[in-house]
Length: 219
Image (tube, rainbow, N blue to C red; front, top):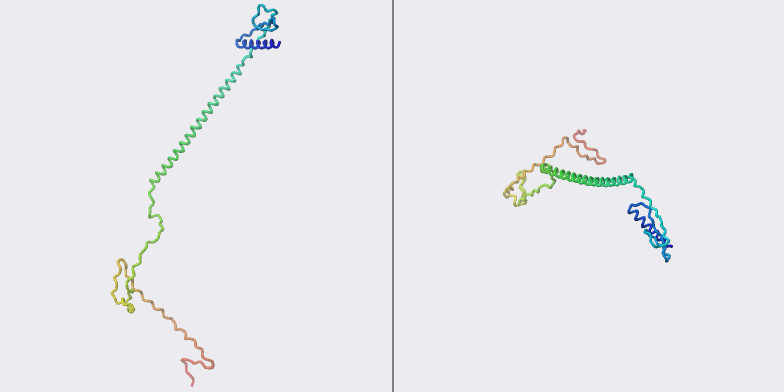
């Protein structure tokens, strides 16, 4: 009995698949019989010599629901919208990359122009004048003239120098490029006092009358 039910279900499934694939929606007849050994059989063809054959009517599967045209249109619209959004994203990304490249090129050109202007200004600017610049340095070194072999010459109004034997020699010639030293000026005299100074104070000893100078004494 279990085998018969399983065979019937399998046959019904096969018929449903066949009918669904073929598109034929009709009632089908299935024949059922039992052989001499008690085995139940199912078949679409009626056995000729089998006793107790039963005809079973199998109802066709329900037709599929009709396709809604609005749903198909909505699906197509969503698909087209997604494709359009993908194209717009790709176009926006490409435009952004192109804009970044253009900005980078503009920056490079501006930098090149700045460097070129600096070079032109440096070429057109005259060099600085050394006279206007302030130079701080040490004064030049002037060597001292060598000392003469003898004592210095004395002016004519001073007595001759006796301690040195070389005083009476001829005067040495001045060095080239050097002027002879001028004669020293005489020392000025000190100014005379305008008034006679007071005589020094000399106190008289005790018990002695002071002496009067320049007066008359009594008789």
